[in-house]
Image (cartoon, rainbow, N blue to C red; front, side):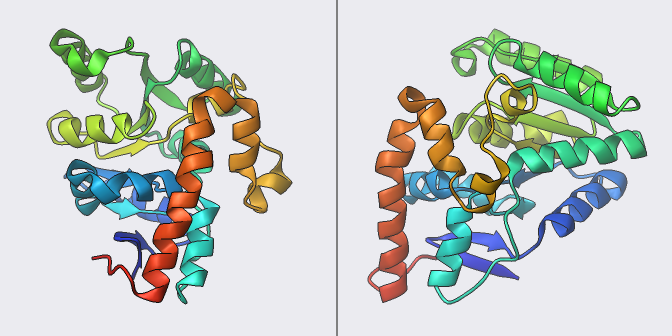
Length: 252
């Protein structure tokens, strides 16, 4: 079952159900697929972005990363089963990958972030097979040679799960353009997760995560990078949800 929030069809699955479906597909599926973890920023971005909407339409799973989506679902007189945070999903899938001997590739992040995340995760899970990390240079998306290098590294490594930390919507665009040719069973865009796992960026205390204030903590930590997303984007998201609730806008 799916819940429509401002035109985004979100799967009504809890965290463990999402993990189960991803692992099941990796183990038995042959067709490459990708998972989307929307937040309020994504909802705002796709309103006038046909490419982003198509990316969502073709996704294997669309799961709510932001607590704001849980609140929106309740306001729209529906419900979601809980938050599926991208960083938590990243860490949980790596733990399972270690148990089931699945191969992982980390693409993106700030310089050094994916390597540090690899070290942290391999120390935590000695059997984990992280078969590659790569941090492309700024502007790589317009450099054909660099794009070819990235694809070559991933195809050579043959991972079972590809985690992409390039920020939105860049990571989604790249996944959408490349997931079929890479032939990786599951690709997931996870934003700043490499930095959070490696402690390059501090994560909000657990009480703030549970109370829906993680966005505020991130704004305090990185105000110059995130002020537009939260100060401008969050009110826009609220306005979109309000219009859907009162029937001014019908999202399909």
